[in-house]
Image (cartoon, rainbow, N blue to C red; front, top):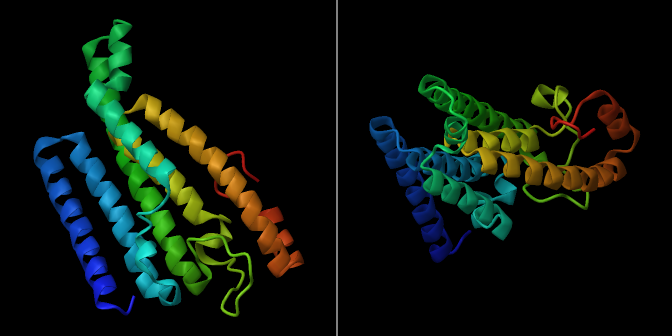
Length: 233
């Protein structure tokens, strides 16, 4: 992060994400074009990942903090949502109902409900993840810690008093919200299933190390605080 090229790349990436967020949001407000809102949500998410890391986890800061290199599966999933939206013109859910000869007003109501629920989910999910990163401070990491470092402590207050893995829960809710905003029925279902499987495995793996780091203190914490994701203890 101390080389001129690295600083330049970081600045360019942040500026690009900021422009995508701003222009996407403005374009959606005037046109209600779903993909522009989706791009704005996506850009803001990755921009906040970097900015919060820079402020609250500075020792871990790098270009990777944008988590743009989040794996091919992540971008394939996002592409799937875009493809469904383009093929169905943002109408996959209400479109199915119309084929069942539902009245137009019901289909229109479903469109509005999916958008509103999606917007609420995106806001709640983003807030939950951001607050989790902020409150955990240097104890938060984008990578599962396999060795306990000096600054690593067990955080059980704040948002962690109610949810063991608020950053995972936040991302889960946020991701589903983005697809609901696009009115993508199939992508919403696929996102939910794939993300649940991923976090189920990741939480199990991470908590093995947390139990090693903190022993009975973590076992007691785990026994009384839910993970934050349905069906994952």
